[in-house]
Length: 325
Image 1: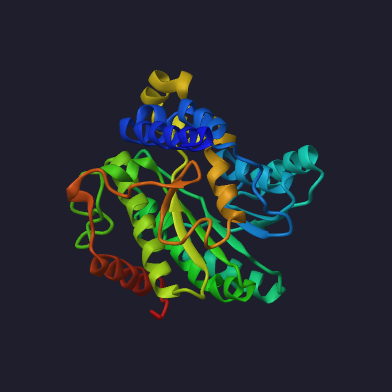
Image 2 (image 1 turned 90 degrees about the vertical axis):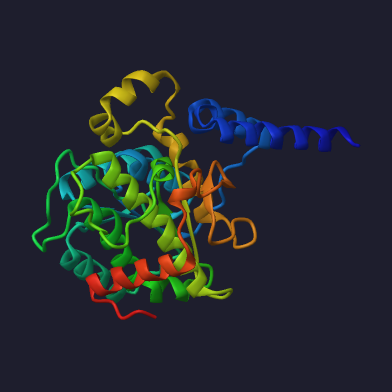
């Protein structure tokens, strides 16, 4: 056997071991080892039109920065105009690029409709949508429309935005939707009988984990509906990446794991790679981390059926007023 193949097989074994033991694979240790073992190159996104939600901070900002640096046309979707402008100015200063800023509150379905309508009417092309925006409120809160905020922001808003922008993604010919999930989803299934967890005592991490499981389920359902010719749908998780939101929501976790947490650029790497990857290189219906498909389940009780994914899609369609396809 040639040495290159021995090295390749050894790298795969190390990669798998890190994934199974969680801590090395999710941390900056795993990112660094994988980058060196597999010789990652800069993602090829030049000329691609990519939209990123939650773009003014954390993983969203880091994703936009690297996309701009690699030559993509970047659309930054932010809730706060002030913070969005500050992030855009920083990215422009570092890259010389000129991303476009859009204002939209993903927790407000009317805001999503208004933004999507305006974007479609502008005629701007769109090749990739990265649904990154997410929240983990410290207390149970509701939107003005009566939805639990975690569910509204992390599930309903991205669902509606994706559905409304599908026509433009289909026009691309190589469209892709990326759902930025979390390793926390491994701890949860999705309760279709209580989707907003109204019957449970509020838990920031528990509600967040269920919403992140929903994102993976929706990506799989969309991909099955799109078939071989429509846009590619996939989900991913960034590993343990330090962000302002994570530090505020999980101060204890941050304190203990701080030395091995990934920075935001390391957490965003797979999202940027997926934005440029073709269908064969990164097939739809997969859950990615560090540029490779990873298991979607670590506990049997978190598994769902294809029927469950269909029910979740229909539930979201009903709550957002979208006619199921």
